[in-house]
Amino acid sequence: MQNIILHPPEDTDGSAVSALIERCPPLDTNSRYCNLLQCSHFGNTSVIAKADGKTVGFVSGYILPQANNTLFIWQVAVDSAARGTGLAQKMIRNIVERDVCANVSHIETTITNDNNASWALFERIAKHYNAPLIRSVMFDRTDHFAGAHDTEMLARIGPLKKADV
Image (cartoon, rainbow, N blue to C red; front, side):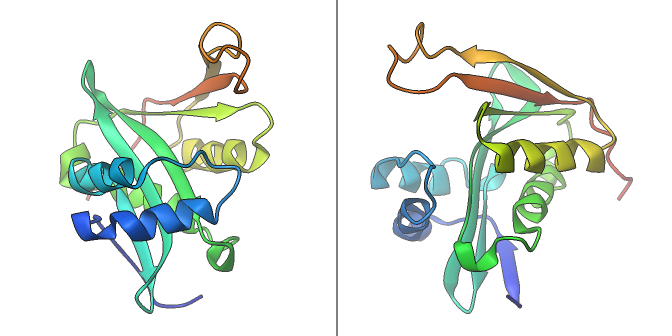
């Protein structure tokens, strides 16, 4: 896949993001309204990838309110046609390297234990930034999800060693 353009999403991208996430199981689908908020309220810390006008990737993220040095990556979606190209890593790096993330020294996300693709992605991100990746339980299957969802492990990467721009 060639000519993929990365940029912050706009509020008009919400429906396309919802459609992309629906095509990317096992991702949890959110309401279209939630995706609209991700694209508008969190656009400066999210990224959309388009190829020939079609949405082929999306990463939603935000700076933690209680820790302004930490970027939390909420969701990573890559269309099947764009998988295996390194797009997910490029999208996350695109966010981290923005001015809005100048003070970001850590990246966090949650991943279920069995999501090998996501663990591999965030291990590559940690390697790129020459930073350790620490795993711990964030949301327990029993305590937080009443048995309805697998435990979400917190993956914390940092401190990041960013290249001088």
